[in-house]
Image (cartoon, rainbow, N blue to C red; front, top):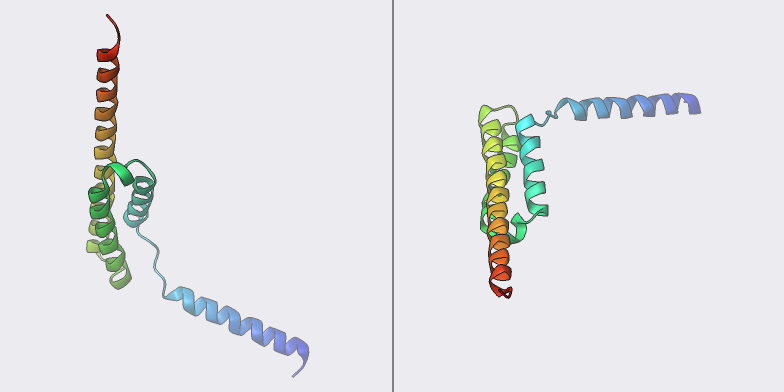
Length: 117
């Protein structure tokens, strides 16, 4: 076998292997991609410190959606679980925002009370 034949054979085998491997993959549903983004955003923001238990609930919901995607990538339940996970992350973010606003309000009240009249 010539060097050229070996290169062609190796390239063909590699291409066939890649095609075979890609045939078994499924596109990530939009809902799951959005749930991942929502959790990443919530985890990177104030929810991490101000609403940790709700963020944990969101992570558990995302994990359930990820598991459903691994087992049943095209099932409606996978998309439903991802939707729930996204909403859990958004809830953690919203509650952290409420806590931040309440904290800012308490600080403003304290500052106003300490001003001389």
